[in-house]
Length: 354
Image (cartoon, rainbow, N blue to C red; front, top):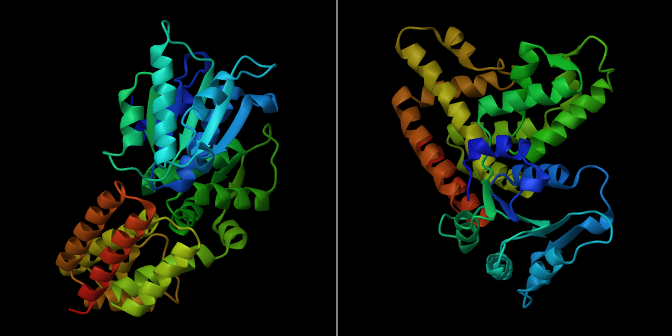
């Protein structure tokens, strides 16, 4: 069985241990999202206070030449507790063989039942991937994709996380925070934890506290967003060498290719809007108001220069390239996705000076 990306959160939220599938495959280019989803499934299945023997973690290397090991681990129930979870990290050929063997053993049973769950946590997988096919076509399995978040999803995640800690967020702070965060759930979660730690634990019975723009600036600084800004501005200004170095820095920091593409797309969408306004008679000063949060004074001249290099038509073509690259990244490996993202961004950088 399989779920669509927008259905994953609801599926995990409604998971009941006694009605869970035998195997859940969590995969996608959003590495943080994959890991956070797997953690949520583990918590829903085992609860908070489980016996350590109810949980087994296997790296893909451990399954090499041992296709039956996964099935054996799932069948070996602990002395305490009525369920067990086996967590596999990786999606190589050994994992594929182990998953197929495990599902086949379950299918052979006269009355298929299971008292264990297997979670397989993998990187991005093509639709033709044997691992995806195994999970998507088996009635006792579920495949959950995790893709980079859209802007509206980031805002929703911010509000939900802060509300759980009894905080609200003012509009300007939301703009600053949304623009500062990447689209990888893992990065978002870590940054929100830093912000909440900065604000401090708040009594759930007290009046909600308020997160301001100053809080965001003080708690998170500008390193992550600075790297994204350097990449975007280098691309939009046609500075190929700088764009290549900025992309390499983000890759070295573990930023997924899809995140860089999504941030670039959001910038070019806003640039397209601002240029369209100018072409209809709006002054540049007013058109710059389309950028949210407002541009930092150091960055404003760079964006003004971009507005002289680009037209709304050129932006539309850049957005086509970015949308196609994002779509392609959803079906490729991490290394292939990184190459596709780099190619798309450098194509746009070359177009900037034409």
